[in-house]
Image (cartoon, rainbow, N blue to C red; front, side):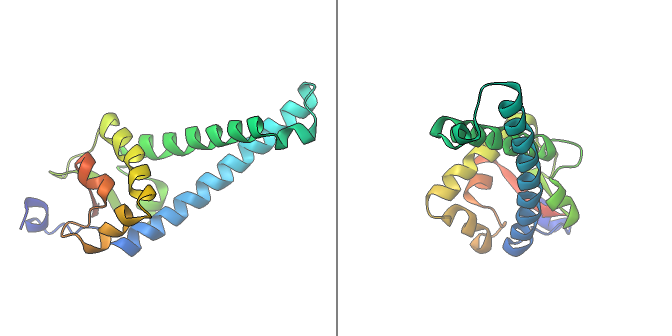
Length: 151
């Protein structure tokens, strides 16, 4: 038994973390959609861009980059902040910590976010690990040295 578990702090399980992710995904979708509309309107009315040009691969790539910037900023800055988690995690009473239960820094939050790509590309197995590991860690948590615990 480790120090956090001995202190009565439980690890956040798969379904709680999944529900937090759904809340965060909804927030990010709304923000990205809003920025996308503002950007599209600006491009159409402030330049020579036609609405059809917004469907071109380069425009779609630009919107994908916008989504990545918003999503990564949201997760990284919220998880290394004093809140220790995103709005979804806060709503469900969980927080991201290092292995000793301390607040994580920017570097650890950055690594954890981009390691989620690894968890995803192996057909989601890195995320499913949360349901089966002792400390409820996904692959991205294990590699980055993080835990997601109940408050």
